[in-house]
Image (cartoon, rainbow, N blue to C red; front, side):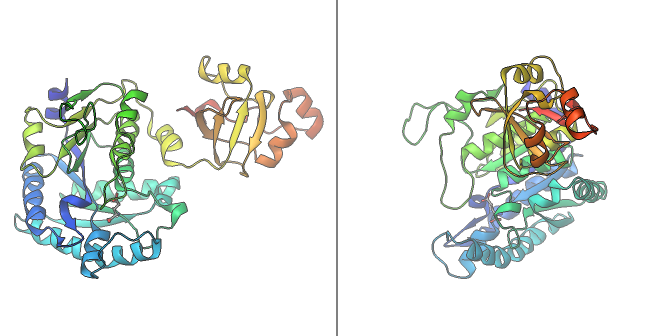
Length: 373
Ligand code: GLU
């Protein structure tokens, strides 16, 4: 199954981790960037369409500014990113130009994708670049991205980009071979897992909370990105980018890395956007009847099943639905503000009509705007 999917995929988002292209002591790894550009350029020449998401701006900037350790302060990370991003792009441009490949820089923040119009705009631009044969090189716009509008790590960004450009495959290149049955640093008998059909809780637990010195992500953000891409029908491949031609060989059917299969019945683009791109502004705690209606019977959410409301949100905002115990299970767009819901929660439609004189929407969240997570 893995071989067929890999052979057929045309549009590939390739995420390149910081440690592959930069080190805080030595700066940009120019040789590595040239090798990767040559390999990705070769795939592009074989009629695949490559979209790159590259980290490395912060580390490259830190090195240029002679700052030895990764700062915890956001302004310093942002300043380093501003210094490093142009150096990173210059290196990519020179490397890709060697084989006459054209590239483009695209910098995104989470806000660009959370607004549906901006999301569609970004999509049109990227697809136009792809059609022109240009290889977009995307990074988070770290310099302006404060916490609320930040993806936070480029694994998450790459998962969203896979959705944004309707990719057939997400490839995450880092300095590890893939997902192991145990932590390979602690246990030498740990085995590489070649195929993950479904991302279960056990698989997520395997990731632990591993983090590296030079990037914001770890195995857990990679698995989460794979999960999100999978919900949209995009499979993910984790590969070691230190190995020459790792991606080219795997696409030809050779073994290597960990392949995460995508869901059999993927969400539509809009539902994917509701569930994974938008960030919830509040939460509703629901009674058992409402939980069953949403999870088992495919119904919309009515005011009568709401027990409690958390957060402040307005009509149209994304909110989470949780069980009485607070376990979240769905996300959707609300027809009512938090303030209004406080007035109508637990009430039947007829009671609300009496209370308000009229009723604009029967549903608090219409089924079309609701996704089980
Ligand atoms: N955007 C950051 C950079 O270019 C990387 C974030 C990450 O490590 O995932 O340096």
